[in-house]
Amino acid sequence: MTQVKHDGWYEGAGLAPRSEAITLIAEKFIAHYPESAPLPSIVPTQDGNLLAEWDALGDPSVDIHLSTLTACFHAFGEDAPDVKQDFLLSSETHWTDFFVFLVTTPPPMKQHSNNTFTYVIPEKARIQTALDSRLRGNDVGE
Image (cartoon, rainbow, N blue to C red; front, top):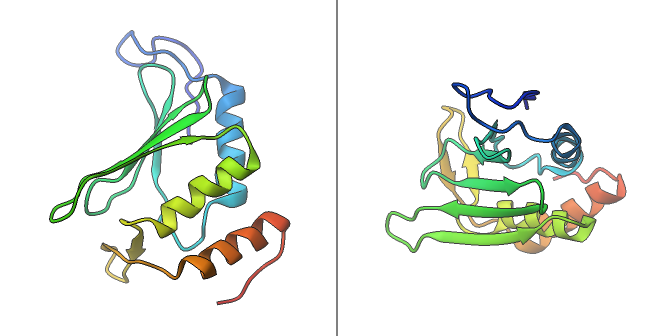
């Protein structure tokens, strides 16, 4: 994540996200983002928040509202309903729920060797166990 330090960063407009909020988000992603999930691009928005976007079918993205520590996931279904889910991110449990959602709720993403992504439905219990273990600082083998 690149920090934007001053308002007016986007063609003379655009609020700069608060640096302490960016630090918090970066720490959560670094510590707990599932290794099995592809990395998103995370960019500032003109209203001082963050947007995470994945290069995958359905254009999945998450709007992260820094002042309220909330997030809204969106993905567009081709032959299925669109997915929209809101999250509170003010506690470790909320963050765990958010990251579990990213890898267990359709459309979860799997990267192939040719750098394309497809959606898969992983075994929810295995993912939850792995995330719980990572949150406790343990490594879990596949």
